[in-house]
Amino acid sequence: MSVVREFMTTDAWCIPEDQTLEDAARKMKELDCGSLPICGNDGKLSGVITDRDIVIKCLAEGKDAREVRASELAQGKPYWIDADASIDECIRMMEEHQVRRLPVISDHKFVGIISQGDIARNYSEDRVGEMVEHISAREHMAH
Image (cartoon, rainbow, N blue to C red; front, side):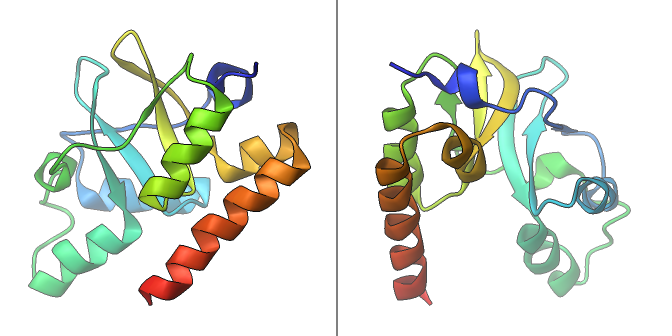
């Protein structure tokens, strides 16, 4: 049985919680991505920040992205998956929470990211098709 650790991206970036939203936005631009995990100084995941969070929760409220820290948007409990979880469990979690990528945790620390694309490149075509269909169908219903 395939596990998350086999498919995940290990060179994933985590924005330190004391960095500004401007730093996060620059890193998203550099990496060409729309979200970043937020990590504490201990390497533990404390949240996930999206480009939309920066716009809605900072800029649209008149706040300065050069002053607001990532930790201020690290609210609630982020979705994540254990590195030793099965790929089927990972797919179920993505479908349930309508996300295309999940931070990967091992020994309580952030170790990588797994995305729909990582799974699509390495897993059963039938199962990947179902996953994409389920996530996309719910996204369209939500809009």
